[in-house]
Length: 468
Image (tube, rainbow, N blue to C red; front, side, top):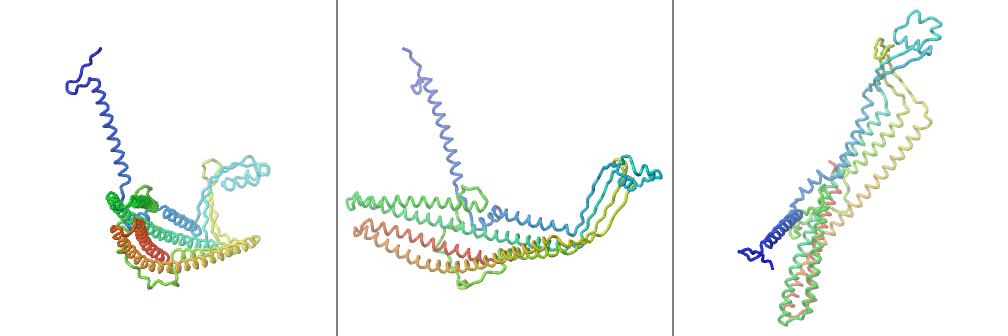
């Protein structure tokens, strides 16, 4: 039998003490790691305070749809700048190295090199020249003077640039509306969470009250079970409301160009009690759209640009006037610049007949313009109908708010009466549970009515926004 020495202070063997210390050190490391992970997760889930103006400003700065619209504007501007070529000269340079024994070209090379001698007129040499080299450096200039078809193309490109600018402006207005709507959806989600939290608090208090009465033999266990089911149902709805907050935060973050996963808190809960009533006396069905709305103006610019392209097609049948010039340096040696000469002139050209291509192209462009005009008329009528529908929806929302306010007051009074009767034993658990469910539903419906009213107002502002 082997006797192991023990630690005097604890009574354990020495090696056992070492093992215990190692286990404690491992457990300490695990606790530190768990604390770090928990703190990291808590930091990720920490809500971020966000106001409506901050959300709109972030969306206008980082939204990808706006970046795409900005690129479209820049592309249209670049296409317009390309048309500056109808006024500016084009300059080119070329260097050629050639050799020939063709009689005509060989004599011409020597003429250009200014190296003709008496021996070059010998008939035998003229008819059978040796290989004659020529190294030519040429500078060419082309200057447009009068090209009516290109002038109208430039006007059309300018109108197209303006159309894309207006489309970009309309996209910005749309992003502002979508951000406002998303922010209201987040407010609505927080309001729904508050309603469910109040309902859960009431249900738990009622469950505790019923449980105490069951223990005293004053109520049956079935009543407690019914209310327990109500508590579980309300907890589920509260969890769904919290998920809607996360979903609304993700969509709002998407509009702002941020990565998903961040939960945002609104500047104030969706306070339906303090929400101001809308002044809709000036907004009645039949109101007309503003003619200078950005998208409508963009469509008109596109139609005008199409008209300029039709005129450009017609003008291509007219004569064109352009100037040209060149300066050449010729030598029989590589990198030699012995002889120089220039050529300058004005060219008047006219395509008298091009197989009816101009006529058919003009007819095609005219049909495209007619199609754009019909699309514009249809879009305008559809937008007017949408405005009328939205204005009527605003009236319905205002009416619904008044009705829901009365319904909430009635549901609150009904619940109060049934709660008193239940505590006095004059009504069953089923009645009070129905009253509580009805009260929560009416509060949610009232919040929804205010949400519909505010979103409708924002949409009317979007439909009637001016392009100025």
